[in-house]
Image 1 (cartoon, rainbow, N blue to C red):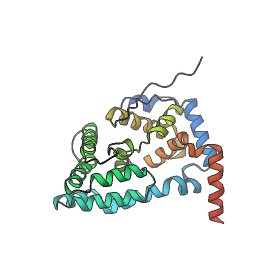
Image 2 (cartoon, one colour):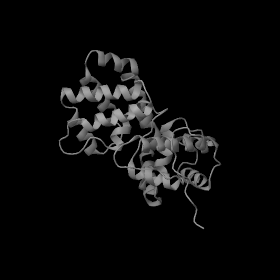
Image 3 (cartoon, rainbow, N blue to C red):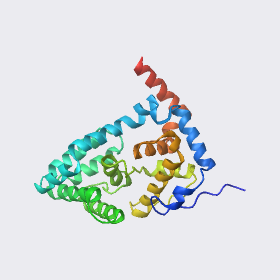
Image 4 (cartoon, rainbow, N blue to C red):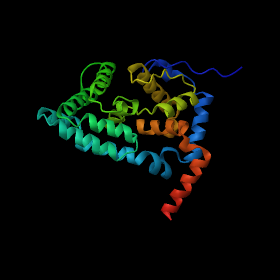
Length: 254
C-alpha cells in the first residue's frame, strides 16, 4: 500500500505538530541534509552556502531597520529612506529573482508607492492584531502598489522581508522548491499561487514540525529551517550539480 501523506497542517504551533512521532519521511530528509552537510547546521560548507549571507542580512536589518528606527523614520514621513534600506539589504542576498527586484523597485519609485510599502511593512512586523490580519494587509498593500510590467505580489516578495527582519517567526517561500520539499517531508501543503494566509500558516506549521523533528540538529531559527527545506526541494542539490559546486568551492579555497 502506498504511503499516505500527512494531512495538511492548519495553524502554526498546532498540537499535531508538537505531538506527532517522527516519520520515515522526516528521517529520510534528515539523511539527505546530512549527506550534503555532515556536520549539520554547523557545517562550514552549510554556513558558507546557505546561512551566513542570510544571517548577515538579518544583522543589517536589526541595525538599520529595527522597530524603533522604522517607527522614527515613519514619523518623519521618510518612507523613501525606509525603502532604500530595505532594497539595499535584500540586494545582498540571492533570494529574489531579477524580475521581482525590478518590479519592486518600479513600484516604490514614487513617493506614494514608497509610503504605502513602508507603512505596510511596519504593520506586518510590529503592528497590532492577529498575525493573520497583519499578513493579509501586507499582501493587499503589495498587490495595490503601482505596476509597470510584472506584478509585485509574489510569494518571494511577500515573505522575504518578514523573513530577513524576524527569522525567529517568519519563513521565506519559494513556490516550486517549497512545494517539493513539503511533499518530500510527507506534508500536504495547501498551496495557492496568490499569497494568502492559509498557505503561509501551513508553511509556518511545517517549519515548526521540522524544528521539532530535527531538534537533534539544533536549528537556530527559520534560516536553518528554510535552508533545510531548500536542500530537500532544490535542483541545486541534485548529485551532479552539488558535486560541481563543491569542486568550485574547493578551488576557491585553495
